[in-house]
Each structure stands twice: as structure tokens, then as C-alpha cells.
Amino acid sequence: MTRWLVDRRWEAINDPLLLPQPLLTELVSPTLWEWVKLEPSSAEAHFLTAMIAVSPSDSIFAHRPFHLRRAVALDLAHDEARLALFDWLTSDAEYNQHEIPWGYLGDPEADLAELREAKAVADRVTDPVRRVKRLAEVSRLRKIASSWLAFRQSGQSDFGEWCAEHGIDLGYTE
Image (cartoon, rainbow, N blue to C red; front, side, top):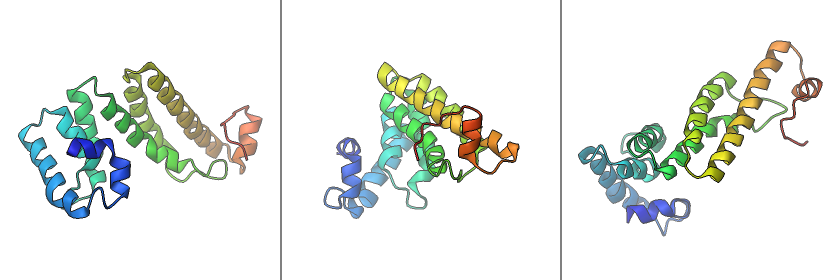
């Protein structure tokens, strides 16, 4: 049942008829936490825990990266976990850059550190089409973060103008 829920996680999480909160908190999550405890070398247990479990004392987000990293380390062919980890690692940079060219919302240096890990994760995606797409995404995000850092050091006030002067195309249209 848990595997079915994960496969339909976006629908299930957003539809209370498919995943009522008591089912998630009283049955599914405790079962997953117990599975991870009993079989710490199970990549599938870590993957499912990362994707759907809710900890009674914490947020799922505090545990998701750990369990995704474990799933990938335990099963090098687990592209589903690898792609979920990639999405997790790039999500901060995606959010922090969504106001470009007007502003960068977070710390570009922290984003660059996460994007280095995201690139390493993307390098190991077994599906070549997915791998190329993820590598292009990391490259785009890194280019924006690096350009923003250089722009801030320049002392100029308009990122769009600075990019034009330096021949940097960030792929955004106003």
C-alpha cells in the first residue's frame, strides 16, 4: 500500500480521500519508521520514508535528504531516489532565483554548495535523457548563482544590465 501511495504521492498528498491524515500518521508513517529501524540497509525503506513518512516530533523535511542519500548509497541503480534527491538539492536555488533579474532571495554561496552535490547526483542518473536534462538544469542554476556573486562584487545596481554588459544570457525574458 505504501508503495502505491508513493507512486501517486502528488495526488495522494493533495487529496484527503486518498490519504487521510490518520492513515498517514497512525499507520503508514510508523510502519515506515519501523521498517527503516529493522532494515537499515533497505534502499526502498529509506526511499519510501523520505517520500511519505511524517515524523511525530519533526517535519518530514528534516529527514528527507538523509533518507534519500541513504537510498542512493544503498542502491546505486535507484534512479527514483536519485531524481528525488536532485529535486531536493536544487529546490532552494530554484526558489532563491525566481525573482531574477530583480533580486536573489537567498545565499548564492550556499546554493552553489548544494548545486555541487546536485551535479554529482545528476552525473549518476542512469537514464541518459534524464541525466542530460538534470545536468543542464544544474548548469543554469550555477551560472545564475555565480553571476549574481560577481554582480554583487561589481558594485553595480542593475543585474540585467550587468549581464548584458558581460554577455551573460540567463535564459530569462522580461
